[in-house]
Each structure stands twice: as structure tokens, then as C-alpha cells.
Length: 398
Image 1 (cartoon, helix red, strand yellow):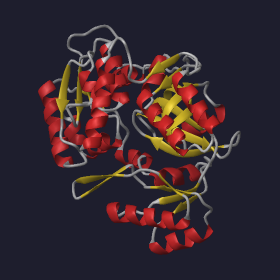
Image 2 (cartoon, one colour):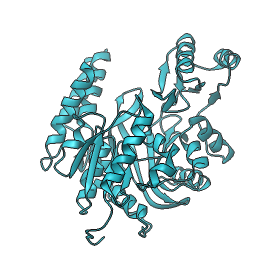
Image 3 (cartoon, one colour):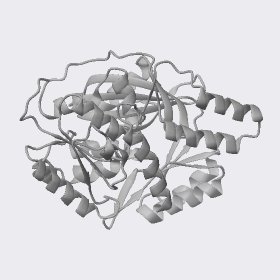
Image 4 (cartoon, helix red, strand yellow):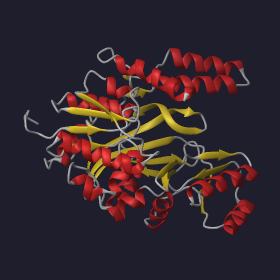
């Protein structure tokens, strides 16, 4: 893209997340003016040398209407309909639900509501996958107290409990939902009931898979998969699962890619998304876990591998042509140092064998992954790594 003084700006939200920082660095390297927003002044991406402006907005979890109003006012203040980048369901879903109002002031690259709502609802996503013959884990869709009692009689332990939505709003207040692991049926019953009381929604129950996890990523336009990328998870924040702290780019796995393409084509998807798979056992068959219909936490890995998703998304949002591509560097590894430290502490704390603890320490201090980059840490832009720690401490204290 040639530099254009009149080209739209970018408004990046969720400044506390590494993906927001990756987005700031990417867009500014293409001479796009960037404003980065966050719920707190301590959000790390607000302190990047590449952010032209920073901004603190009301939390969508505390007052969703105030949040939407603040975003629209900021967009109008910036002028020329800036392109909006959301890194979490918390910030994206309220804007999608108020799309007409938001898009009068900014540009939001997304598909129609009747379709994006399926991707953000885990129950609808998995039912769509079943209809399209995309394999899923053994899943029980709970709709009532009786369903819960019946399922718990038959399901094997440990049990995975998944809320239907990562974030749900009740009376204007956001309730975060996260996947939880229950070692027994009584614990699963308690988790499901707690989620139902807080959100008014029943959860999904799944039998646990033990294989590797993979991400199939892309930028889609009306269901056409324009830009492709894939990674394999090497280490997670919690060894039982959850966010990754170390992952590596891989060649596109054919079977998973076909499944991802089938799903996103059916949804006529427009914009970035991640389709997550897990093998049912080591060396086993892939099963669809979920769709993240937005940018993902490991965004820096794709960029380092040669797929500049934020820049390509910006181009698509302003109506420029984005050529199809599936070429990128393999292997490249990306590490979240702070999360990997938490993983190390978890392994050592729960280790019963000194050899396990020693191996974890060695992996942490002497990583052997090829072409290793870091999500946050950079000698060229050092402040965010400091503010990430400050922000983490501030959140714990509050």
C-alpha cells in the first residue's frame, strides 16, 4: 500500500493483550496511524512506541452501553471512519450487536449477525459441525436440569464443562465464561449450575481429549479463504489446557484445513478467524473444539512467519484487494514469556518427580525451538514488556 495521508486510521482495542500489541506494531510499520485503547492506563500496548495515541474506555463488562457510546464517540472524533480491531469477545460482540450505529462512524470487518452469532455460540458451532460431518468431541448439549442429571449418569470423567459463550451480558453487565475441568461428576454438576445461575444459559459437557492442539487461521471474504496459516501448540498456560504460551508454525494440515474451509464457507465468513482442533488422543484424529471469530492470542506468530494479518485485514476493510496466499515460513516459534513463567510454576508446584521439574526448568531457561520470537518482549519496543508486568500486578491487587 502506498502511503496516503488521507487513508483511514486504525482503532485497536484490548490494549492489555499481546495480540493488540502485535496489531499496533504491524499497522504502524505500514504508516497507518494507530490509536490503541484499553480498559486501564496500565494496558501494555498503550505504551508501545508505535502507538500514535492512547485511550482508556469504560469496561464493556461493567457498563456495556457506556462502552459502545465511548467507542462511537472516539471514532467520530478520529474522523474518516477508522478501521476497528477487536481482540476479544468482550469488546467485539457489543459492537457487532450495535453494528449500524458503530459502522456509521467506523469500519468493522465482519459477516452478517445471523452467521457470526453461530460462531460465537459453542453449541451452535458444534451442531453445525455435526451437520457438515466435521468431527467433534463426544459432546452433551444440556438444556434442562433433567438433561444434566441424565448426562452425568453416563459421561466418563474427567469432564470438560464449556459455557456456550465466552462472554454473556445480563442486565448490561458482562459475565466471562471459561472452560473448566471437573475431576468428578459432583464437581461438574456444581460448575454447570453456577454457570446457569450467573448467565441463564446451560453449558456443554465433553469427554476430555488427550492429543495435541492445532490452530487453523485465516482471513476470509464471503466464505472464501483468502489468507491461510496454521500452528501447533507446544505448551499451554495450564498443562491441562487453556491459552497457549508456546506454539510453532506448521504446514497446513490437509484434513483440518478441509474441515475449517467447509465450516467458514457455510458461514459465509468475512474477516479474521481461528478454527481450533484437538486430536482425540496422541497421534489420533482431529476434533473441532471451537471457532474464534476474531483475532487470536498468538497473532504475533503469524506476522513473524510472514502473514501480516492486521495489515491484510486493514486492506480488506477499506475495500482494497487482498490476494490469496498460503505461503509462510515453517517452522517459526512464538513464546509468551509471562504465561510460560506461570506454566513453569504450575508444573513445579504439581510435580511429584524431580526429573519433571528439572525438565521444565531447562525448557524455560534454555528453549530449543527454531526461529523463536516473543509475543511481547522486543529490544525495539521495550516499554510494553515492563507494563505487562505492572498491569498483571495491578490486576492481582485489585
